Image 1 (cartoon, each protein chain N blue to C red):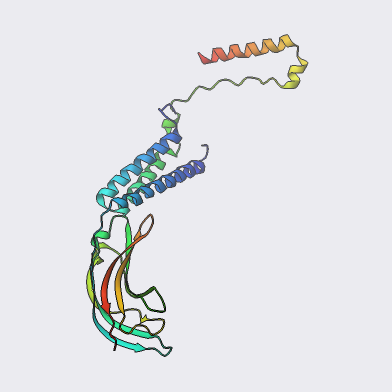
Image 2 (cartoon, helix red, strand yellow):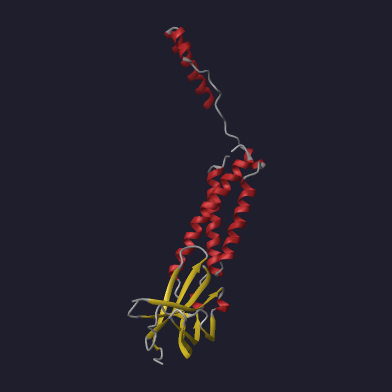
Length: 165
Length: 100
């Protein structure tokens, strides 16, 4: 070790390797973190149910979303991406998932909220099969950690129906 | 160094020590930032202590042996057998004197 540059190089390389091991321990500690979020979703009203020019059904609804995600945040959580999706079955497509609303929660302070809002993104079907169909509203949350792998969980609320008009 | 381990080993042990301190304080404070700052501070302290040429590093230098002449192959071929044996025994005697 005859030059300063060589010694600093060795020290910094070793420090970064130890940091990698440290980060893997941190992401493993997330396994011991118990999360219990409370979510409630409901449809307050169907505001509009129209047919687009191309022949596809389009729905606008008002949702009441209230949630408490503060227990999902651990010391290794960077942010939480949550979104509400409507899921239904039509004769044309077996699986339909339409994202209606989303938000990014950056810290524990933002994690508890309750809002009444119109769907952010348009609820459009491929075809005109939405009359009188049942749909589930599912709340998904993606937990993005500071180090480690992202995981995602969901909670399903079923039993909503669109009017036959 | 006349320590219990070499400087390179000491570097690794110091880094591992600061990493364990960092993960402990970070977990207790529930803050990733705290862990990184403690570890970063530890790395800087380690570099300051171990990298520059401090006087304590050359306090107790190790005794090295004197260099001995090498018998090259041309040398061996030209010399007689007894000469080669004598020179090698002389060298080993010199080595023995050096060690005590």
